[in-house]
Image (cartoon, rainbow, N blue to C red; front, side):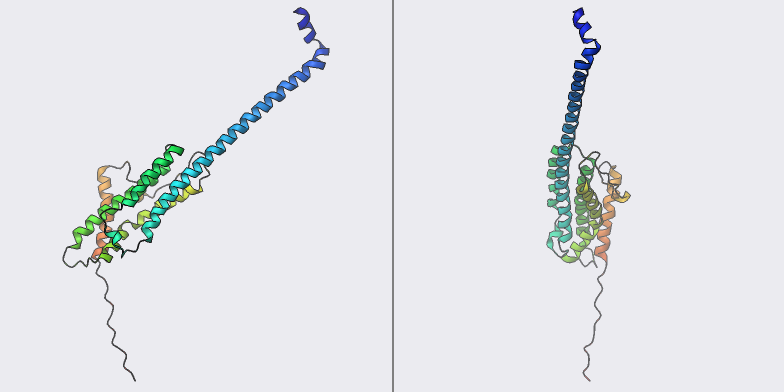
Length: 226
């Protein structure tokens, strides 16, 4: 054993065997570190790609819902329903995104924003029905539809902007943040009295729209021929 240690500690062994051996170990260690780093990078890219896919799929559902609301003519009886059941599709989209993304604050907020549109729709519809039978109110189906859509219209933009943030996301954490306007902060987490005031605000807008007396077109006498 003494002879063995004496041999490997000699200058000749270090020059002929030791240095190449150390260099080989260093090269192997460096290659192992490089492979691990590359594998980690590849995993992060794959995870980012999955996040992009899930985020864009959810955002597309949210934007499609807003398009649906904006594309319907206010003269369409579609607006006279007590609720908009199509908006509930956002929940299945949210659940699907959670499977790939886990909990997402932005997706939760967008979901809440769409749920708030649904709540506002129901509140505006109830108010319109209460006002429609009052004297002097010209509650034609077209005017009622216009009043309801006017009551909830300003809730659309924050959902659109937040959804577009999701579409632009590169999938790397942290996820993008969206600062909701103060008067459009999702109802999730608000106190009951705050929610009541919030819903009354939009119902009041619908009522005001319905109470406006339509302007009559001026009567024009037919031109006399010379």
